[in-house]
Every structure is written in structure tokens, then in C-alpha cells.
View 1 (cartoon, helix red, strand yellow):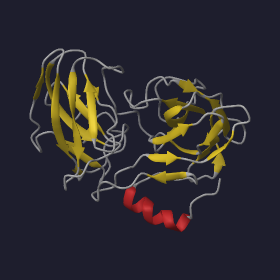
View 2 (cartoon, one colour):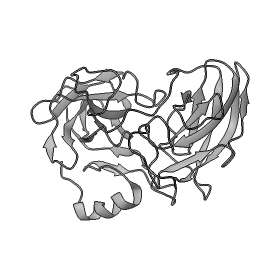
View 3 (cartoon, one colour):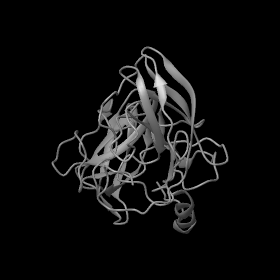
View 4 (cartoon, one colour):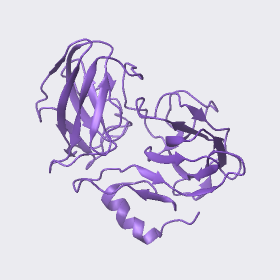
Length: 287
């Protein structure tokens, strides 16, 4: 599968922060003109499955132009777990050429690649492991076809900054809303974080599903309570300068009270480029 012209993407990388784009993968049209916001990529290249239905491709290490052996490719049917929990389907380890093939029924899937230096196919990621830098690759699996999805990975330099309490399923309690930029346009591919107190400089207690093309997100909660909200793009390390980041209520986050077995609706979190200084290793304290 031919690569997109490198010179064209030097400019795109500077503008959008996208980690990669392969032939057969095209960016969903931009819905915002503010800071670098990663867009989901749509993989739409197919080959004859010769009786198989699923996904195949190659996993390579970014900037090294070499294949990743022993990595695993995971596919998810939705983003409730933010593509971080157990997946619906997982490949066998990639071979010497970084190639994989994964059978799956027809449907729409998110595709990610990871390699844990422990050799385990699942579990938390640690510094030194490899992961898809761009974790918003979407493809449609068609009967009798293999969707071709090539993936690039980078080494993780800091632990995941994600959440301390796990709610990776739909519940009857939560918060729904939209992520928007400074012009009021939706932010796709971000997530909202909920805290039980005003300390937003720590691991969040809960996190939302990835926001869709309308910027819509849902935070599923086990029970009601009072929460403070923020939003960002990445699920690892502290925000980098320029990364979209925001708090519900502005600089001084305001509380949101949720009743058990009900949803608070129409929460809008405005995101703007993060201006704090980046400090390596402070992955559990965003700034």
C-alpha cells in the first residue's frame, strides 16, 4: 500500500499532530480550525479475502522504518473503554515483517497496535512498551474482504494518564455533553475526565468515551455524586504545549451534580491550546 507523499505530510504533521496516514486511510474532514486536534482516520482500502473476512496490515516503528515483531493488534466495536481495555478481537503476534491478519465479522471497528516488553498480549502499558500513537483508526469490515490497516507505533516514555476507577460499560448514571473549541466547533477524538474533588492535577476518577464528529461524549458513572470536569486529547503523560485542554466552567472548574439513575445532559467543555510547561515524567499530574 503506497504511502502518502512525505513532503505533504510534513506540513500536515505540524498543523494537526497526526502521527501517520497510510494509503487507503483518509482524514475525516476537519470540523475545527483551532489547535492541533487529532482526527480519526478512516481505513478504506480492501483486498480479496479469499474466503476470509477481517483486517490485515503491517505494524512498523515510527521514524525507524522497520517492522515491529511480536506486537498485537486489537480491534474494538466502540469507544466506551477509550480503546484501552480488553478488546473484542486480538491478533496473533506480528511476524518478522510486522505483518498481521485478524478475522472478524462485518462491522465498524477501531484498530490499535501494542507491544508490551513483558511479552503479554494484554495488561497495562508501561514505559518502554510500544503503542499506536494515533489510536483513532476506524475501518469497516466487509464480507469476503480484508481491510488493509497499516499501523505505526512509538515507545511509551511515561505511564498512562487515564483514570483510577474503571467503568468500562454502559450504566444508567452519567454525564453527556460536547467538547468544543474556542470557535464553538466540535472537537472529535478527545475525552472528558471526571473528578470527585477540585484537584484536577491528578489521575482522574472517571473518563468518557471518545468524542464523536459532533464532539459528543458520555461519562458512565457507577452512582451519582458531585464531579468536576476537564477534557483533553491524549490518554498518556501530561498535556504538551498546544494540546487542546479545558475545564468545565473555565479556569475555575464548577461542579456538576448527578443523581443516581439519571444523566446530566448538554455539558459543554471548551478546549484551547495548553500553555503550561511540559515536564517529563509527571504523567499522573497533568500540570
